[in-house]
Image (tube, rainbow, N blue to C red):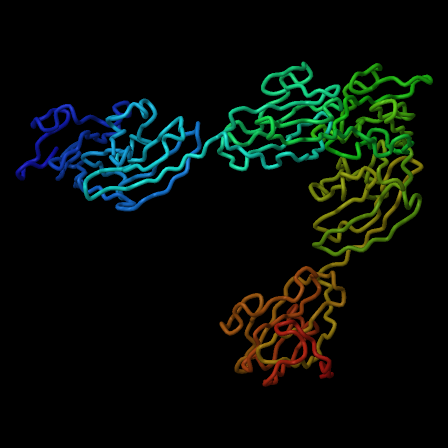
Length: 635
């Protein structure tokens, strides 16, 4: 609906006024819930109030403001803009209204010919611009920029973007001739290094990157004669391997050569005119092996993987061929990339195929049959030999074999029972952890014969096959006893585990008073700890004496004064209960308690005295301190 003389008239789908005929439609009729209205060919008469009406309860109102096109003010009005273009290319002369949606009533582009401006757009008064000029973006009514294609030096001169006698922008266009391409390295020689199998760019460019030379030829020296290789190929050797590096930049004449071989090495020319030439010497680098003509000794373990290291000195160099060979009955047989024996099928691959100069071979699922002599072969002059020894997994000898190791743990914590092969990469055929129950060893890992260890035991480091150490979590006093790390009847390590109960935390200074001195504005530590630092008390409370009553300040705060200022000094050590207080004030002076349990023999008391100072002490500000004059007195 549109509001006309205080009455809403329907304009869609039925038109009650001729004004909107053939100008209104739904924006997207294929989406049933999108009721947006599209109005075309706006005039100032369309300005006003509209309604999107679905029902008396479902109405959206709109106020439409229409800006008159005559309000187009040019951005660079009454100024001259200098623009440079290049012959054979295109150029844009920028001109726009300050409001990009404003549409001027007219737009004329003019060119100065013999002291008179002639129109070149939209009407052409000269044939010179026929089919070469257009608006840069006709979909944006306020963008009046002119696009001129196929520039020539004749296009150079003065232009005007004319909207009205009061709205004019002038332009001075300079056209640089493409024939003026001067090569950056004219009459000089550039040395470039390339790697076999890779690509290389031979650099050549005009000093003006937008200048387009009338011709470009790349030549290669063959038998003392330069043969053209681009754009016309006078030799098959470069077919489908050469192209300009960036054809979109006319002054960039650099040549891209792919799939380099040592035969590409030599002398090149980039020529635009007989006397405008850049010389390029391409030096090819082949693959020189790091350990060429040497023998490398490698050890692997049965059931595991191994890498035979072989690489070019230049990791980007790609050899023309790579063969891995294995010595069978005094003859080297190829195992990669072609397999002349079934034994290595699906077990060998290059370690890193994405790095062309890394030729290292990865062999998986080693067996003792893989032991022997190998070669990394690039050419008859580039060979590295290997001697691979494969240790059988059954050779796992336990470090503490046939001995008993004593281990102490703490209830509620974790413990590690250390067990390992002398060779950490050796993988035993089996590993069993056993626990002594009623004079019989029961398996607890990897198969659990008792519920007690469910989800509490695991190998400490499963990624190291020879590390058989067992990690037990959430210790209880019931875990105390005898264990075995069992590999075979001849390879066993025994353990005697003692579990200390956490309730056994005895305070170091129990029933004593510790005097501590701190400094206002600094931090202080009130020392309190169990005699066993790994023992974890069931509870810990720090209290402060206020009006003859101890109030808790940690972990629960019964007073706002200590908020965000108190914490345990080292929460990672369960038996270290020392309290760190920051930003000390004289109000913090007084009596504190480190309280572990309600029994009288498990309470520590601390007196704290603070001294205000006019200058900070020698220690770093806000660092926890325990000062040298800390003293303990018996009560």
